[in-house]
Structures are given as structure tokens and as C-alpha cells.
Amino acid sequence: MKTGSANLPLHNGPAPPWLFKRMCLLSGEMVRALIYEHGRKEFLRRVSDPNWFQAFSCTLGFDWHSSGSTTVTTAALKEALSPEAHGIGVAGGKGKTSNKAPTDIREKGDALGISPRKVDDLIHASKMSAKVDSALVQDGYQIYHHAFFFIPDGKWAVVQQGMRGSYARRYHWLSDDVQSFVDEPHSGICTDRKEPSVLDLTAKESEENRKATLDLARDGSSHLIGLSAQMNLPEFSCSHGMKMD
Image 1 (cartoon, one colour):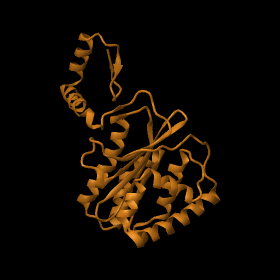
Image 2 (cartoon, rainbow, N blue to C red; image 1 turned 60 degrees about the horizontal axis):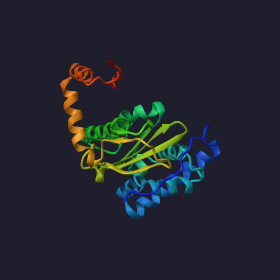
Image 3 (cartoon, rainbow, N blue to C red; image 1 turned 135 degrees about the vertical axis):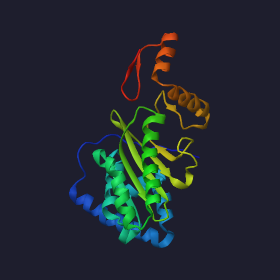
Image 4 (tube, rainbow, N blue to C red; image 1 turned 30 degrees about the horizontal axis):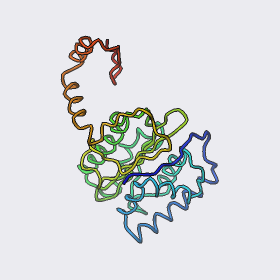
């Protein structure tokens, strides 16, 4: 069962440099011990668990339950973990750094000896997980952080976060749990605040909605404009910014 919550308010300002340096050192050694005892797949499984991730962040010394517990912890892991020493690739990050995930995956995939075809699959998984949480999970949280973890056999995990006002929501993925990118793919979603109105098109109950949406999209914008006019709907905007009446 996917239950529980965490309070992730917005705290301004960067983590103190002295603390971040220690978090990098400690996270690298903790992951090294975890891999030694349980293997790299277990590391991915634990990172994809919202509760374990939150506890891990606090263990590293980031004792504020805030949006920064996501961004700082994943940044420390990206700094500390390397394909050569740990056999793990970490891609992406916060803000504009998240857009560099494909480049990171190619560079670290090459260092891990992953085939070009499998690297393409990893990049696809990275892009799809980001797109699903920004487009299909319509909860009002703007995705601004995307961290992608992967290992030589092609298994992966995602930790990404969105903001709505002064609160954050964190989305976790694990490749072993993803049978379909659009059908309940998350290993967990972490937040403290329940929104009054959310459209989750990844829910099983939304399958017919997804099919109807896809059919409408394939029909083209002119058809949608005609339908909205017939139904006397108020004007609205497409995701690509074209105004519709």
C-alpha cells in the first residue's frame, strides 16, 4: 500500500557548503556499504522508496523536512557516486541541470559499458517519467527537478520533484515496477498536502479517459475547436500554447 506523507515546505537558500561536503562523503560510503551487502539493485529499490529516501536524507545530516531534502540529497549522490567506484550512474538535477539528463546518461552509460541501444532506452525512460509527472499527473505541481539513477544491466530509478506555491511534491519511480509508463507507474508520491482537485491520468480508473484524450489529440486541433464551439465551452489553451476558442 502506498501510504504516508512528508511535510516538504519551501526553504530558501542553499545548503551550507560545509554540510554539503560532509553529505557527499557520507553518502558515498553508505552507498558503497549498501552495494557490498545487498547489491546495486537494492540501492535503486531503496532510493525509489519515499520513506527510505527521506530517512537517508536526514541520516546524511539534512535534518530539515523541506523541498531541499530532495534536491540536496540527490545532488550529494550525484557528486559522490561514480560509474568507476560504485557502478552507478546519476543523471539530471535541479532546474536547467535536469535538461542535461540525456547527456549525463550517455556519458555515464559509456563509462558503465552499457550498449548504445540500452542507453537510448534509459534516455527514453528518463524523458517519459518526466513527461508523465508534468502532463498526466495534473496536480498543479510544476516539475523542476529530475534525478535519474541507473546501473549496468539497464535497471533505473527516478526521484523528481514539483513545486506548487510554497510546497513540494516528490515522485518516485523504479523500473521493476513499471509495466507501463502511463498505468500506475510510481513506486510512491510524497507530500504532506492533499489537493482538492487532481486529475491523475495514470490511475487504472482513468484508462478510458486516456484513450478518449488520445483519440481527440489524433483528430487534430481543428476538430477540438469545433467540438468546443458546439458545446459552448469557455476558451482554453493547448499544452503547446495555441489559444482555442
